[in-house]
Image (cartoon, rainbow, N blue to C red; front, side, top):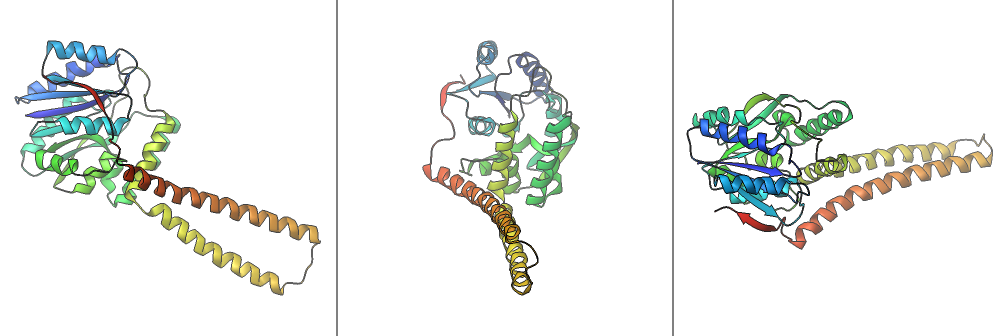
Length: 305
């Protein structure tokens, strides 16, 4: 059986087309399947539409979360509900094409792979948003030491052993594309062009995207701490040498100018220290969140029968 997991947040305009294309793609595989739609606290008519489809087709199951817990938490809820031998992760905005589920399944059936990742050869975003995506994915690929990760997102298919390994990871702050890379297994990719949104505007605002990027970077790398450390060493060397030079230099400027130079240096160092404290604080806060051991989400009601 194939399980398709799709998180939904205020996608009322897209749901009919999303399910029509998804069901058609799954039926073409010739396998039994289930579609797990996770409503992540939608405030439009998304839940009502999902329940209407569920009442007409029991292959479509709905998890209603108690509030908006975020994209990665919604995916996690759906993955834990999955009963399939193969599980597909797909966003709900139709930028990832449901028609690719069949080719993913065929590639999985070759027996060479445990995970097949969608590999974006192009993407429809433009402007500043596209620039931020490019910077983040290049940086994250560098952190993972995996160039292919630069063009991989949530769209993927996992077999049962790979999914069970993924479910064993208990951290609350999570970035699932990174966790898929972490669990290993035999991974392949399927090239595709990522399309523009079918309807409406992107639901993840810039601050949420920035937060997700921070979660990914701080969860998988010591790079920010290492940058702080090396910049600190450079600062010690540079300002140490500058201090030695000043000790032996004849005063040639008015005293007031010296004071201004000292103040500028102090303000600069103070700003750098605040930035470093913020980076360290981010790691400490993420550790604190993990020790709280709060559930990632709550399911208000599961429509799975």
